[in-house]
Image 1 (cartoon, rainbow, N blue to C red):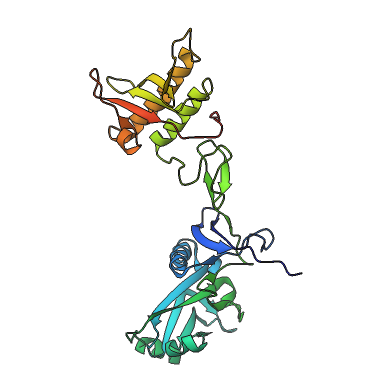
Image 2: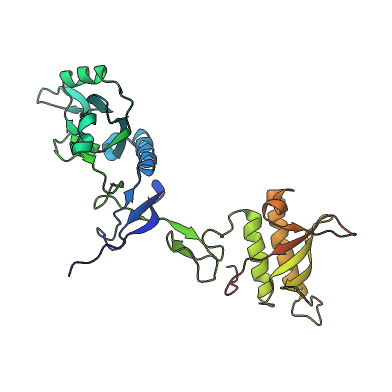
Length: 319
């Protein structure tokens, strides 16, 4: 029995060179362990821009490039020259010519199943490209071209191909490139593939704090929960030179913070204070409001905040 395709929404990248990009893929459809993603047209444009930047930085001779050619459904046919700026040897006399391709697009026939065609560049093709211009007022259309420059000068007839969309998505680099899942790192220190949206600790990807004070709020809560797992919030006084936790709560019930009667000791409270203090120093005066800290009216200080710790299934300690 044929295996059913299991398509998921996720993000992929190639190390820190390409991406991360939103995509759709079958996680079981792999080439030597690598993924085969499909992208929307907008994401394909982003991918194209990154490949062109890589080619400019590292050279076309070692880089594949993706090109998105825009047009209209009622436009007349156009010819487009895509030139790498490289040259290659064409005969034994050492004559050289630019490494380039000509893309001919029958815009009016695309919706009827026609496809763009790719060929070598001739004087006639260059003249046709000079005369080509976008015409028409019809629906926008796009043609996506994948060029493998390192193979093009060797005469490969598959070095440059038109990427045909399937269900509105473009499969690029599948069974060729080393695509892998982009990841997100939970504040607790655990890494997850992008589509795995909830950490074992209970933190979700979308709620995962990213600012220094957001991370510090979680860390201070984890520190307090080592001794009082029920802790949900605290009152923090920012008056004066240092941040200081003055009360800790489990829901609406205040937890005893006295050193000799409650669950806490001075070292743990001081550690939590220092975590918050360092983040506040890094971010500046507006950080508490930006992090969602709630200003609490108080006669003795105008800088008293209630800090709510992220709800977790289990508190994890920082490494």
